[in-house]
Image 1 (cartoon, rainbow, N blue to C red):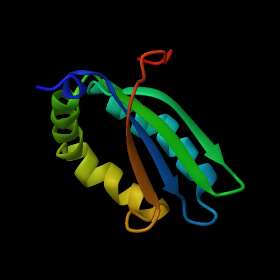
Image 2 (cartoon, rainbow, N blue to C red):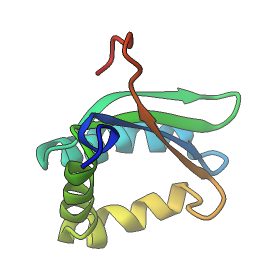
Image 3 (cartoon, rainbow, N blue to C red):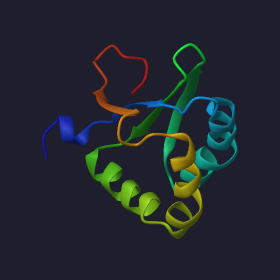
Length: 113
């Protein structure tokens, strides 16, 4: 395992939300998605939204790539995600054109680690 594979990874996730759905999306993330993911071990560093761009931004943190792979499997193969959450998400978020995920590794002087 390389040094980079064994250090924390942050995901900067930016979603374009369908017109008229931003308030509903923010409420659903705060009431359902973030608590669900946290209950299974995800660390959500923060979340934000932009009315100007009709966009939702959030950051998640993982100890390393192995943890990220494990948590992805736990969450995105979970019965609740597949049967309950995903259908609601697809009503508000274009997964084809409205999602950007950026992997980030902390630099030595970063406060977030």
